[in-house]
Image (cartoon, rainbow, N blue to C red):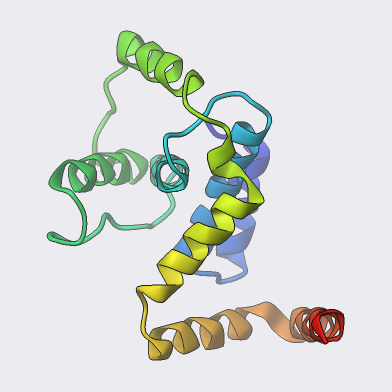
Length: 166
């Protein structure tokens, strides 16, 4: 169950006109924090991200499930279910035994999957699967929703990073 603060952050992102994936990012951040605090673990970084995306869909973020052939069929079905539940199209069944079993299983998973290094490697892998054109389009879209102040801060941060590496 996501925190109230997380849902509020996602709603703020929506009001600011940010994309559904950015709104869902708030839930992924929360999941990473939970793992770092030791509430539970994850088998892989992808699993941690997937849990966050599922929470986002259930909370009503307009993030449609992946298309057929993009991911495993079971993953797609799960995402579809979460999406429909979040959009109010179906009433999710309460399954306390399953819920408890999942929580217990996740407690035994490693916590290192949410480390800075693991997340960095995951981001690099994900970016390498995209074309330069796709990466560029994503950056342009992000810059549009940042606003003048946000762009200025990003530019200053980039300048500091370049100076640090020079």
